[in-house]
Each structure stands twice: as structure tokens, then as C-alpha cells.
Image (cartoon, rainbow over all chains, first blue to last red; front, side, top):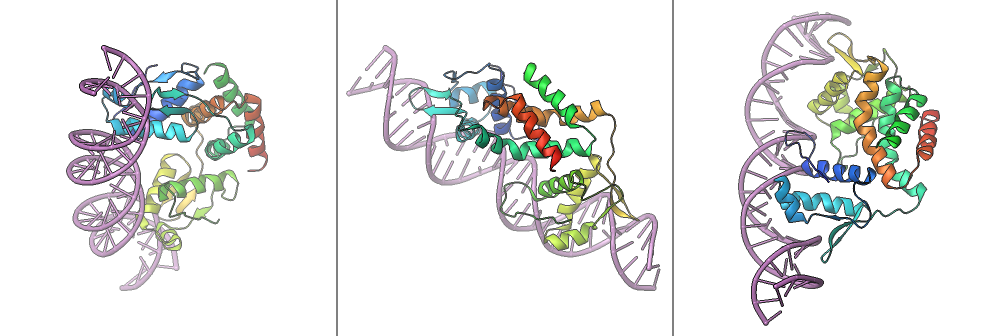
Length: 122
Length: 122
DNA sequence: CTATGTGTTATATCTTATATATATCATATT
DNA sequence: AATATGATATATATAAGATATAACACATAG
């Protein structure tokens, strides 16, 4: 899976990294059991520091996207508690997006269409 | 409209401020033509620096939520270009939320329900 | 057993972002 | 004339982000 870092982005590198991996999982480019490169090798590939990658991996682990193991390295393993709990977790972020949408005159039907389109072609 | 700052939050104060004002507009607690407190008075009320409020106001202006005028101060005025352009703007943020949802097994029907609920009771 | 490669942790340094403190300016209002 | 507005500038302090080394415990390959 290709990961690209924009060094001119105002967004922190470890956040970019985390986001792209979440995207990769959503797109099924990354599946349960797949291994990610080791902290050091990915850092080397991207031209960033080891700790930056480590921070992204630690974040992904705490969010239940992967498991870190001394033996196997970083392995994708999406942990799903239950639907309500997971919905609750994305609620804050979604709420901000919806707030913007409402302010800008985007109807819920518009939002449905956008959501459907994303689910189709992710 | 009540604004509260969490000084222990990892989120920057000016971002908290910006977010709460966007929320206020979405909830129609703030409407076109309404005035916000001046930079200095709001800073004083919240116990933060003038520049922090100024930064939030400047951000809201650049996003088309308000107008800053020497005469009238900060006045809510939501600028809507056209639907497609506005959808495009929220697309990136929404995409990240949807990616998380897909990863965590939340269906688009679930998302519709959450969206509808938000539109009902914002 | 040795060497290598994991993730993990620790320390130090540098840069950038955030927040504050003052101060000044042009302008509009009272 | 006095006051208050947003806008701007400068300086300082703190926090976050990123890098550079180094070491540790553990697992595996040779």
C-alpha cells in the first residue's frame, strides 16, 4: 500500500500517516492479518523519524486498528466493540461535519447522497 | 450564546472557539445579522488573550461564517457559494469519518440514521 | 550462542504552533 | 475629544511536533 507524506501540510505527519492507514483499511487495501512495515523500515521509506511512525502506530493501536507484537510486528486487526459504542466514538467528528453542512445549506438528503457515494466507491 | 473553553483539552483554544460558533449557527442560536462580542470583550469574558479570539474570528471569516466590520464588530453572515462547492469543502473531513465508520462495521444505513438524528435535534 | 530485528522507552535538541502581553494604527461612533 | 472597533506588529513563554541517539527486553534466524 502506497503512503505519501506531504511535508508542507499543516497536518502533523503522524496524523497523515494514521489517516492514510485508516483509509487503506476502509478501502480493503489492508485487511485483518496484513502486516505493516516495521517502525524503522517505514520511517526509512518515508524519510521520517522512527518516533513519528511509532506515534502513528501507537495511535492506531489505541483506536483498535492494529496490534503491535514483537514477533509479528504491526498487524492489522480491527477491533469492534459494538455498533453503538463505535457510533458514539465517531459522533463528535461527525457532529462537526454536520454542523458545517447545516450552516452551508446542505440538506440531509444531500448528505445521504454523499455518504452513499463514498460507501460505493471507497 | 454560551461559550465554554476547556483549558485542559488538547484542542487549541481558537479551534474550540471556532467550533462552538459553527455549532451555534447550526443550532440557530446564532443567525445572520447577529453580532458576536468584540474581540476584546469576548477574550475578557473567557479569560483568554485577545489574539486567540481574533484568530478564531479570522478563521470563521475566511470560511465564510461572519463578517468583521470596524463599525458593527463581528456579525454573523453565512456565505454560501453553491451546493457542490460547499460539499466539496466538507468532503475531506467527511471522508475520514466515513473511513472510520467503514472500518468499524457501521453500515451506510446506520450513518443515515445518525445523520437524520443530528439534523432533527441539532 | 550470536547477530539481527522487533516494539518500547528514555533523553536531548530543534522547529513550529499556540497563547499571552503590550503597543500602535486607522477608523467609526458617542 | 474620548472611546471602542478590527487590524497589525513585536516580543516572550509554553506546548506540540519532529528528529537524533541510545538502550532495553524479547524473539527469531543463522
